[in-house]
Image 1 (cartoon, rainbow, N blue to C red):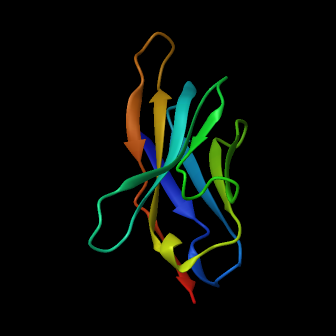
Image 2 (cartoon, rainbow, N blue to C red):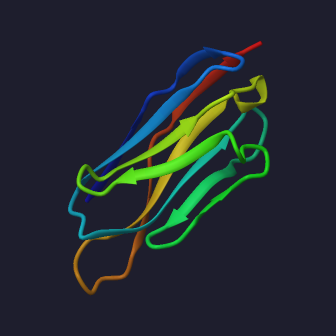
Length: 121
């Protein structure tokens, strides 16, 4: 099995920064793609940033220039650096990884439990 644990959320003032982490553990051969999503109260979950191995990152228009997705292959950890935070960034943030558990297997999608980010005005 594969487990994802997010951390780094919290309360921050407008204009502040947070760095979210998503640590993966378990049986992992490779990570093909990674992504961060968020869900605000009363709204649907939306894509924040995604990146495929060997590819470029994609960002929601609302976070371009402020958020950066990255990863540490050795630590099997994915990050979301969030700068210039705004109250509208308040949401529960979820990481999603497309993981290959064994060589030759197809990838499977795993989600973390989420971490709350609250930006005060």
